[in-house]
Image (cartoon, rainbow, N blue to C red; front, side, top):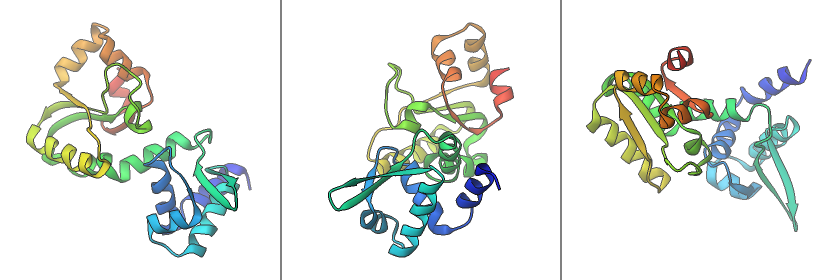
Length: 197
């Protein structure tokens, strides 16, 4: 059995594994020891230890000894990092809420999380976390964003534009739109083919 098959088997089996992945992927810079992770995800220590061992064996998490404790963190160099990150953001947090509330948000053509949001940094001068394109129910969107802000304890920067406005800006090679299209994103609503066509 190849490494890819064993990695997928290691990922898609247990509730504890999903909690461990969610913990690390939605907090990309967290580095924590076993007991700290157990407290955070509220699972049995042996189950968490077993999942961390499996995830470390396939390169999804890495560990480092500091004194008598072993600290774990997400391996951002893993070939599966961005795919896992995308899956977690589509299932949980703001991304999951937007997907589930799609119909209530109006006629949303595209919704995407930017690379800044995924990495929880603001490296670009434009500081945008979320882009929503279409005819949007702004009060409903604002409510969802505010809920996510409370949970994350930080402001989420977002922009909304009509589909016509987006495609016009794209046609004119607007720097803001081109920046979004050339970075790693998690597309929550819509298809990549339509977004870039």
